Length: 65
Image (cartoon, rainbow, N blue to C red; front, side, top):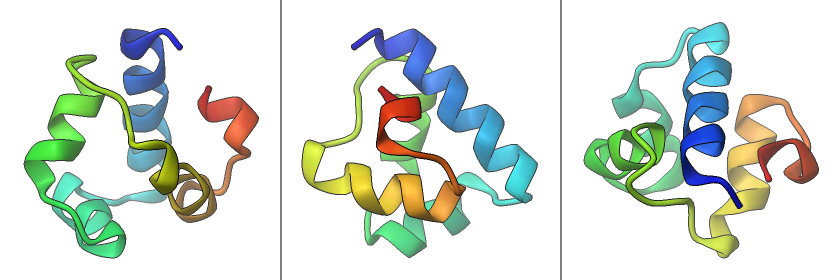
C-alpha cells in the first residue's frame, strides 16, 4: 500500500463529498488528526476501518488500496 497515494485519494474523495477532516473523523469515531496523518501519507487507515471509510466515501476497498 502506497501511503502517499492512498492519502491523496482519501483527501480527494473526502473533498468531493464536501466533508471536512473533522466530519469524516466523527463518522468513523476517530480524531481529525488521524485523518490528517492519512492524507499526508504519514500513516494509513487501520484495516478494520477500511469498509467504513470506503462506504462513507462511496468507493470500494480496492480503490482505497
